[in-house]
Length: 461
Image (cartoon, rainbow, N blue to C red):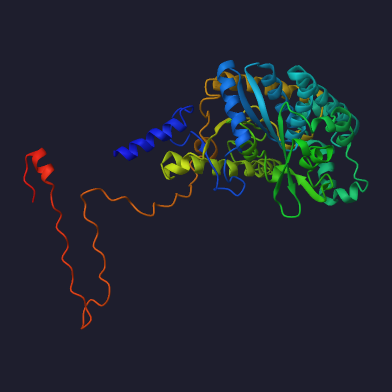
C-alpha cells in the first residue's frame, strides 16, 4: 500500500473512530442520493455541534439516546403502547425523535404531550389514559360489535362475525362522503380533550415527525413539531374508505401508511442520535400461503403497508454496500453519517391476529396487546442493549430483503495503473495506410532501474 493510500486510510479511521468496524452488509454508514427523499444525511452546523455535545454527554452518563419509528395499525397500536411503556420505564434510554404514521402518530403525539407535561411518568399515564378512552369510545360507537357467544367461538378475531361483514359490505358499497356527509370524526373530540396542541407545538422534550399522504400527487408529507395539530394527526390516520380526506394548509391528505409506515429519513436530517429503532405492528414474515379470501386480504394489507418501509430500507442497504465495498471516493466518505438500525418485530407477537382485529376496541384486548408489547420490548432490550449506541443490531439485507437481487453499483470509470507497467498502446491518429499515413511508432521498451538491480543482485533486461 502506498504512503498516500495509507494516509487516506488513517484519515478515514480517525473521522469515524467513534463507530466500530461492522461486518460487511450490516453497518449502516448511510448517506443519500439513492432515494429522492434521502439526499445527504448531514446535519446543519448548529445541529451537528449539538449532536456532538449530546454524544459526549451520552458517553459520560451512560444514557443512550434513540429515535423511535412507530408503525400504524388501528387497534394494534396498543402493541406499540406496550413497547413505549416499557422503554419509558427504563432510565438507560432517552428518546430524541418520534416518527409516526396513523396509530403511530397518535401514540407519538400523546407520548410527547405527556413527556412535556410530566416527564416519563406523565408520558406513561397519558398513553394509558388515551387507550382507556379509546376503549370507552369504541364501546359506545364501534360499528363492529359482537355478542357474548361470538367471543366464545371466535376469540379476538371478529372476521367471522356478522357485524364485521356488514360493516365491510357497507363501506365497499358507499364512500365516506355518502355515509358521513357531515364529516364527523369521533377521534377529533378525543384528541382535543387530551392533547393541548398549542403547547405541543413548542415541545422541546422530543422531536415529532408525522407522515401523511398528499392526495393530489401521492407524495409523502412529513409534519414537524411546530406544525402538529389535530388535523395533522387525523390526516396521518385517514383511511380513505372510512373517512373523508383531511385538509391541512389547503391540501387534502390520506393515511401516511401508503407512503411512509413509518418514515425514517427525517431522523437523518433533524436528529443527532444515530440509533433508529423501528417499532413494528404489521408482521414482515408469515409462513405459508393464504388460501381463504379473508387470509389473502389480510396478507395484502400487510404487504401494502410494509412496502414503503421496505423501499426505504432497501435504499439504506444499498448505501451500506457502497461504503462497505469501497465504491465511494475517500473525500466523499467524510460526508456520511453512521446510522445504527434496530427493530422490534411483531411477527410472533401479532401473527395470530387478522386485519379484522384492528377494529377490535375492547379494553381487555387492548391491554392484552399492551402486555405483549411490553414483553416483546423487554426481550428486545435484553438482547440488543450491548449494540445500542455502538453498532447496528439488524442485517437489513438478510432480515428484510432476504437475498433479493440488488442493483450492482457502477464499475469504476478508470482503474489505476501500477508503477513500472507501460501504458496501453493507443490507436494511431490519421489513416493507417495510403499516401497520408504516418509511420508507426515503435513501442517503448521498459527500462529496468539501476537501483533495483543493485538491491536485488539481478541484471535488468
